[in-house]
Amino acid sequence: MIRDIQQSNSIPVSDSLSVQSSQEIEIIFKFIDFSISKFYDYYLEYGDSEMEDRISDLLVSCFNEQLVLFKNGFLSVIFKNKPTEAGSTRQPDIGVEPKQIKKPFKPIIVLEAKRLYDSSHSHEYVYGNTGGIERFKRCLHAVDDNICGMIGYIQVQDSNYWFAKVNDWIGGLAEENTDETIDWTCENEKLIPVNSFMNGQKYSSLNHRKPKDDFIRILHYFVKLT
Image (tube, rainbow, N blue to C red):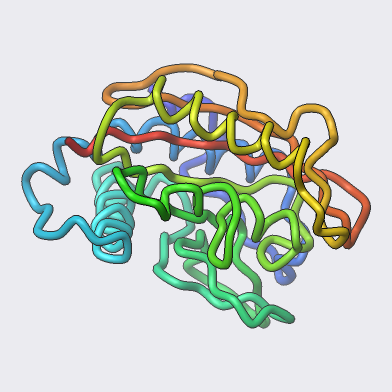
């Protein structure tokens, strides 16, 4: 069980959460890896809308329910909808925050969520006014982090279809983008498969942030909801 990677029942919360240890981040993503596979059945039971914000509400509830199911708590964190980030005018869809804090804090991890469905707006997973990957590349979210997450809610087709589609969009931007404030031409911008889980697939990408001239790792979870 995923709990076995921990030395104790919870992650210690420091006075300052401006910088999280790689071990803490790894454990939280291990929890997401484990819990995301539960969401398909959870959504079938409780899903009452196909709208993105409502689905994200249900995903947050599912994650927090999984936290409670582990005796003595799995992590000393909680998942939250629309957290705020210091210095940003945008709110990510989901944040992971400590349960107990002593000073002002920032989310430990932030995640963007997008519907993958039959629409002219599906490219917003990658780019556009609310583009998910683009927001991280422009440092609108997770500006002080080197890793973050995205959730793709599959409402038509399957993971393989959207994997190819997302990479086609990124490839097109690498060839045709004329916006000098963002760069899509670096290697590893495209998604690469990591592993599959029940009713979904995990991918990874390494994306250039031109404002900081650095890179951020994005872990992508495509989750079947049909």
